[in-house]
Length: 114
Length: 111
Image (cartoon, rainbow over all chains, first blue to last red; front, side, top):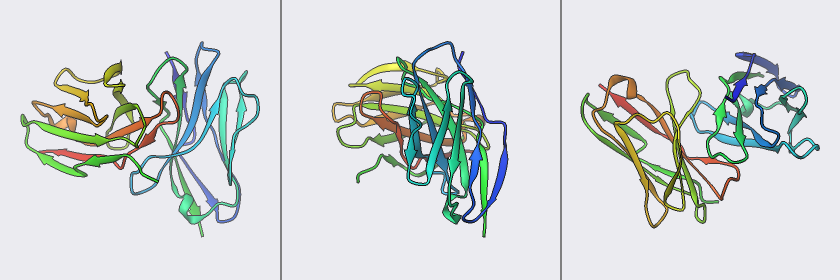
């Protein structure tokens, strides 16, 4: 069974600083997809970034980037130049190539401090 | 850009009543997913549809059913509601197995 682990229930960062959120997963599959979703206080689930396991290059979306370490089954999210609007719950998610559903981690609550 | 639309946004029901949640996917998306997020929990997958056929099933109770219609909108039907069904219900859509884009959710409260 696939499991996704986020070991940091809460984190905080000063505005304009950089923060890294951790995620590890367990799977026997060789190809899969990884995602980071952001859930602000509005409870909307917003797709932040995605990574395909067969791609070695780390995905980047503006201030958001990932460090994908396939051998270590690690998928961390780096947020650069943190902004107040980044305050949210961040969920790491996993999906097998042949499956439809996402498996979510338990989330990391990030607070950006002015 | 058009997003996933869910209705209603809020719903209050009594125990043992029924509820129907609706989802309108992003135009041209062919796959719809339903997730349930309890208070303080991560979203849990319920069920998905691809081209109007059920494609995957997760932890959906037998009291719940869902379908996708010819216009690709989907409905989640929930019967014999229990207090534990109170949650935020998300619909998401994708094109094939691409990234899943979530709607704003329907907050269901069962009294």
